[in-house]
Image (cartoon, rainbow, N blue to C red):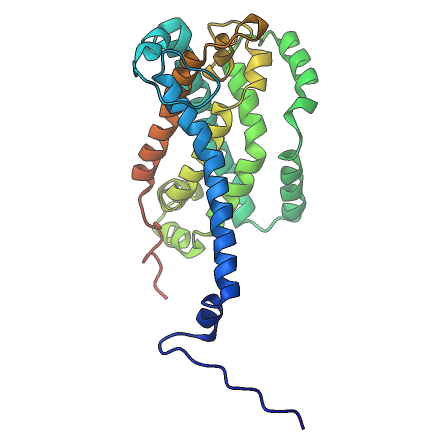
Length: 296
C-alpha cells in the first residue's frame, strides 16, 4: 500500500496555483519573463528614442545621444511644400482613398457571403485567402506592363485602384466575420417594416458594425501608408510620390545621410497615423454597438 501523500497546504483566500507561483521555481519563471519583456521593450524603445532625440539634435548621428543644445532647426528645414507637405498630402490622398473604397467594396462583398448559403461560399473564401498570400513583388512586372499599356503610369487614381485590389482579399475575409456578428433578426425586423435588403444593410447592419469598419479602415490605411514598393514603381513623377517614397531624399550619395532631418521627417510622417487612431476610436465608440440590441 503506497504511503499517504502529505496534504497540500492551502493558503487562506488563495489556491494551489498561487502557492506554486510563490515557490522559488515560480519566482524564477517570473524573473525570466520580466527580463524577456524588458529586452523586447528596449528593442522597440531604442529606435523610438533615437528618432525623437535626433529630431532635435543639430549634430545627430546614427547613435542614440541626448542633444546638448536641443533645437527645432531640423523641423524648420524639412517643413517645406516640396520636401514634406506635398508627399504627406499625397500619402493621405492615396491611403485615405484606398481605405474608403476598400471598406465600401469589402462590405458589399462580405454581406452576401455572410447572409446567403451559396454552394461555393467556402471555396470562394479560400480563394480570397489565397489571394491575400501572394507577394506583391510576384505580380509587379505584369502590373507595370499593364499600366504602361493603359497609360496609367504617374496616375494616382490608377495606383489607388491597384492598392484597393491588393487590399480587398484580407478586407473581405475580415469584414465577413464582422457581418456574421450582427443578428439576422434585426434585419428581419427592418424587412417587416418595409425596408429593402440594401436599406437594411445601410441602416441596420453598417451602424451596428462600425467598430469592424474602423478596424478594417485602419488596417488598410496603415498598409497603404507604409507601402513603398507599389508607389515607387507606378509613380515616377516626384510630384505624385507619397512620403514613403520621398523619404529617400534624405539619403545622399556615398552613404551620406542627413540624420537630423530624417528623424524630423519621420516624426512628422507618424503624426497622421496617430491622429487617425484617435479619430477612429472616437467615431467607432468605446463599447460594442450590439449591446442590448437583441432580447433573449
